[in-house]
Image (cartoon, rainbow, N blue to C red; front, side):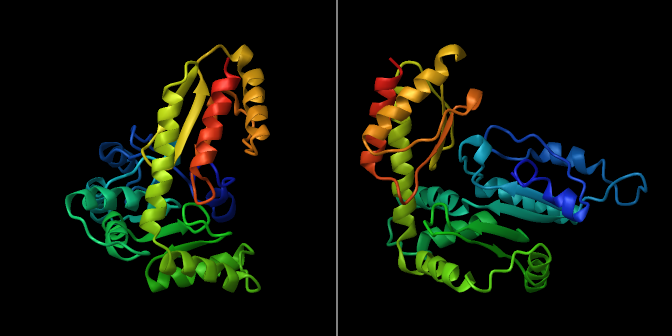
Length: 289
């Protein structure tokens, strides 16, 4: 995400050279591939760029919201420490990942979970143990109107504040309102229950798609996201997509247009209800005929 979908910001704004490593099916940067890449950035060789940071994403959007587990993260942290490289986690949906880890733990040992404490907080700490910085989006699974946070040591956060000011990101007039919404989500709501509900809705949606002929679930990582496309020839996809959108609109549900060969990306969140899933599946069933 940082490389593809941020308008080249690291290079344009700060002159940072970026090197990519293909992720595996689970969104993990293979340790062996990272080692090979780091071998090309010998800090003692004047010909090489010096690698200062590795960035991972959890959950991984390009893998349908796949969860990167704690065992892999420990390996990644170890590699970064050995090579003296900092580690950043793009955790826009890190609490979705934590909810999956926490649910697995809850199946083994039942206990009460409320707000950001309990098992959800414990799972998040497991996934982030040893990382240097993490960014968390408040407006996705948490349902806030906007905002994101970054966590790290005090010196790093002070530098982040300065860089935010440098690029015009200060929001003195609205920051308190956004912060209040974020604090409410983290402190007052049962986030574990909310996120599990979102995951269950996506699971039902994916299961419904799998029952429809002519529809393919291309990416689904077990959380709140899936990418869906048609299995038919491309000549009829636009017409079918338009019919599906029309049928959904008749029931009060708006879905965005078909995204070419990439299909649709559907995401469940606090604003999506079971009836919306039913309407969407019915629209697909009627529209693909």
